[in-house]
Image (cartoon, rainbow, N blue to C red; front, side, top):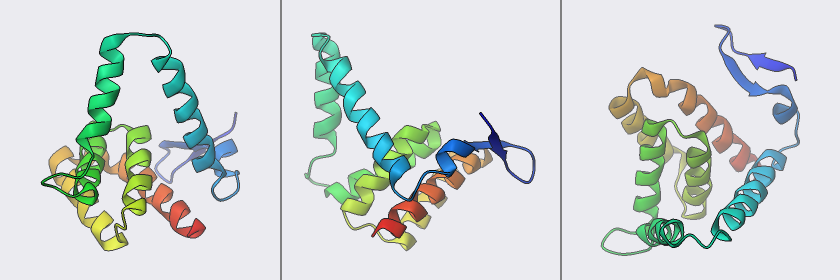
Length: 136
């Protein structure tokens, strides 16, 4: 598999993913996530099921609106450097009406909290956001 490299030689997204049509990468991500979540949950492990339920409930509307909670999830995911989590929260944030300016402020908070090590993940986050906005 050919790998694309950035100007400084850092490994980036594989060429086969970059070559996919707009939206294909996000659709593949969504399908894989749904398939594997179902596979994990079919195990009948009560603790895993409880954690998945807790994760779902944590982002429901409450004292904080869903939009704010999704932005918080995005920042936490950026700081923890979880690209799948970042992509998921970008999609959810867009569904909740987050603007590009709000995304950039959230990315800035993640950068300040997480430091420069989050920059490669922020690059991929902006690429995912660009792709989602192209579909809109």
